[in-house]
Image 1 (cartoon, one colour):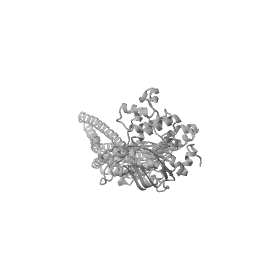
Image 2: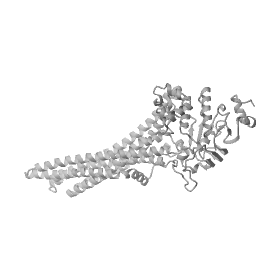
Image 3: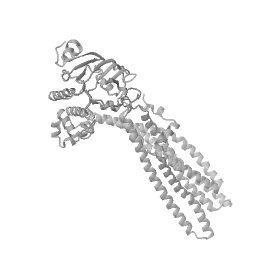
Length: 595
């Protein structure tokens, strides 16, 4: 079970100190702007504190027959000033909130792109994406609104209580008695809001994962007539999100209703007790009016405090999910062992590759993929890896690229352990064509220069000719600027493969890795691409994984793998006589005598 499994939700929650620490990390760069917004809000609230006092003076002057024009002007000025300051403070706060979200999303996106593949494979991509979109939206509220509302609400609440205490301690006691009872009810509700929000966010992540899965294989979904079934799966996740969202809304309504009820009960209690005290002559009627105005004034800071607590409970769930991403292991960008021989110098010429007793498994609970794999490629020429499915051929490339770390043994490039290279230097030397030959949404040009953004038009033209793509460009309506569709859906499988090869060649790599690079090509195009690979092998080191042996019969060396081991190394002719497995593979493809 991983930290992102829905069933692990409760165990993944952060403790209060860790939540505050994570919250402060997002808040700290913007603390000055938040402080300014809080100050403006406090000053605006302060003008409101003076209004009941001004009203008391107004009532007293009316009773004595004095003029009230100046008091009315002062009240009007207070109202306008308070509104203006609070509006500007709200703008500063909202602007800062957007900045908090921007910073969090930029950090998360950068981290997600640097995640190790093992972490990506353990988590649903859709759920990871929802943390960048949905969870950061909740973070927006807790890092600014909750802090400012909590601070200003607490300060203005205390100030109002002090003013009420100065007016009449008995009426204040009545008010606080009702408030304490309702406050206890609100405190019991807050944890329920947090749990409901967290589960709702997890359900949103499920929805994103479902949609990502569907759109990743939409043609298969349609061809299988599975639209209704997949809609039902998505609908179930949507209903879970709705159900938990409604639960959260219910408890938020209970909290807000408790505040309103407390204010109404306090008003009735103060009105009753205060009326009796006015009748007895203990306080003048102006004091009762001002006290009641302060009581109404308490509604806003109380609402602020409840809202701050609610936002904090919601945000704590988002912070926990964001913190989970921050705990996932990422790839190092710099050399990890600065004391070892460096690789900062740019090397020229073909790269050499050596596997020394390499063992590897994807996870501890899975069987090994490699068992003491050992081979050497000295440089230049083509080396092919063949064997049954599951033999570990593609994993060879993944270990060279350091997508994964070996369990045992060493992978050497140019005589140095790949762990002694910085990842940018290592991967800059490699051109890699994946088995799925992905093409990204965008134009043909953008796909070609994806690995070589500084390539010139002449470089692009040369590689198009070499990859036999020049005729494709000529017939496209916008040439290189033609959009290729989501995952290259506007291109054939063979065209996508040739684009991937051209993209790798445009990088001018010292080591070219081709994983099933001709699997979707017809015989004519396969022959053309084989010529491209042969030409590339004269200038660089080319490693090819192939099931179609016709692509590699002319390879300089062929490594035969079976069950995660190297069983033979040789040429096509030699292996036909020396290795029974290779001979059988060749015979099934009519490239050798049946054995």
